[in-house]
Length: 132
Image: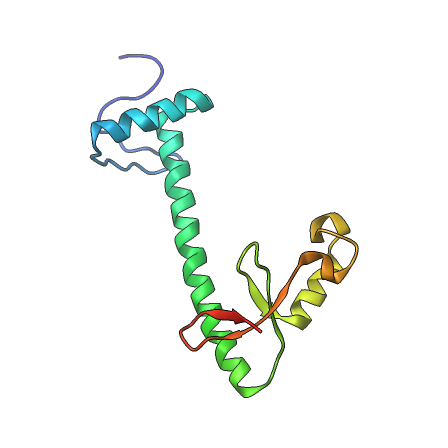
């Protein structure tokens, strides 16, 4: 029996699971180079990349759902909607004002509400927003 890392087909009993994938050798080499530069294992780099991808996909879905919800709310009441052009986040002005009151100037990006550079937007009819 060897000491150290387990080898073979024994499933992990920790908080992680196992995933085996096949990728092109060039991609594996590129990921290994990134891992080496960052002082990480190849596995850690793959986990981070997959996590970032999952977060991005979830954010896209949440943005689409929020956009649809907001559009239906706006059709019922004329709420002023503002967008953060840096992130694409859209919310009613009242929510942005609440964020401004609860954040420090450093978190908000300045001492005034206008410091954030929010722009007024309306639905464009295709599921996206356009500046007023």
